[in-house]
Image (tube, rainbow, N blue to C red; front, side):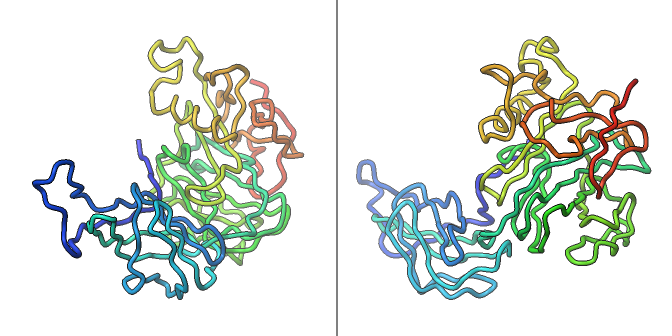
Length: 335
């Protein structure tokens, strides 16, 4: 299981100023710990600590360069205000934090530029049982115009995932499709597209969608899994899918999901309102079944892309009826 607790990249403890007497009872010898760094707005960045802390303004630097005009605190949530960020751009914050007892720490953390034009998005089609000629894919559909900068697709849930892709800034219109290739071969033709939809020449590349290739991706689990789409790392869940061929009786230990990891991911997807279970507790039966799907028989929404956050939204299309990069087929596979 891979977990992410914010965007902290590096934390280095450093001494700055006098430290408390270690012989004193209950002496605080620990520096403040960074828990997350997040853009709150176009010109605001929040740094969350495990205790009240202040930042040394003269030792605060953002790369690519952003001027910092004001720093609040000391507080558990310090806010930096300054120059406007580029939507979805990856930034690095270098700073030094100090608590009331003089313990200090220098840190480097990453965050993505605030994007106030995230489009309405849906996971629209996917293949968890791809083949050598048709590897696993996920299609995202834009229901409105906007900028994709910082939007993230998780192969799993936001807090527990096997892989993720954070999209760079690029413009989409209502009806645009983004196809994410989950098991690339490494071919030179596997080009990420932000302008020219015909630039990529890898397997199943679409000339009518923006193609992206999940580097070192190994595909989806064929029998059960979770997909999540968020407006940014650590942000709001925009959509999600739970799929499973298991039942509540498949095992006694994990509610039928086969592993604690899978059960936890399904539960998190429900909590972030990406999926709705039929009862008070999510079960494998609440997912869409992948049985019958192949590399050319995709699991897709209706042609109208209806979203009720449940298995009734999804069906498997007949052989060779997958429509990545185009409106979904309403045909249903009959075994």
